[in-house]
Amino acid sequence: MVKCLIFITLLMLCLAGFELKASNFSMEVLPISNYELGIPQDSVKKQETKKPRRGRFRSHKVSFETFHESYQRALRYYEKGAYLSAVQLFEQLYPLAVGTRQGDSILFLFADSYFKNKDYHLAAYHFKDYTRRYPGTGRTELAALNCVKALYSISPSYEVDQTDTYYAIDEIKDFIKQYPNSPYIEDCNTMLDELRNKLAQKQFEAVKLYYNTGHYRAAQLMVQDFMKEYSYSTYAPEALFLLVRNNYEYASKSVERKQKERFIECAEAYDALVAQFPDFVSLQEAKRIYDQALTEINKINSK
Image (cartoon, rainbow, N blue to C red):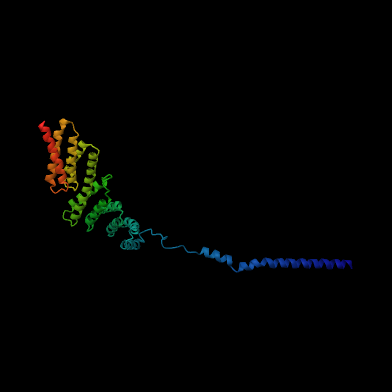
């Protein structure tokens, strides 16, 4: 009887343990049902199948296969005024176009894109390159002119080094010599006059500096050199007027034995001013200084 009771007790304990395991099993299957809903798999799938972005990140590298398409795109950029984008394509296109009928157009448009984008250093370089590579085309003269215009635009203000100005002047002279009947000769002469006048201004400012700091002899010599080289410039009458003043002050501050000859130099400067620029605005002031110089000469002569 006792054994029977023990057996029943053990049997009941086993049944209770089985129910507990079944209960635990039902709790563990809940996450499995969530997994089966596909929540995590969907997010991974979208990430794996996401397509790369297009547009401005797309490669525009030019090849023989894409040459025609790239050339048309470069032309569209050029026509729309997107010159920087056009330059980037023309630069890749030209090496593939050398020796073809499109090489001429591509190099010209390449240079002109730089020109229209106001990158005048590169524009001048490539227009010059065009005239060397394609000397006999219908655009050679225009390329040479645009090269000159770019160099003219590069020329700096008169205060700094004028190496670029001298180079621009040489190129303009070459253009006039090569194309004497060009319809652009007048434009070239205008640019030439402006560049030369800039050089004249630079030297005239140096003359003024010597005069203002009391270096009268140096100012005198510089005006003489100035009139030899820049007598046509707008600064020429001012330079001669300055020479009149300079020579009078130079004579006034000189030792007595040097004064007469230096007052005479003042009178000679006035005579040159009247002869070359009779309508000069400050001629009356120059005449006053001239009269004073003559008075001093007479005083010296009367001693």
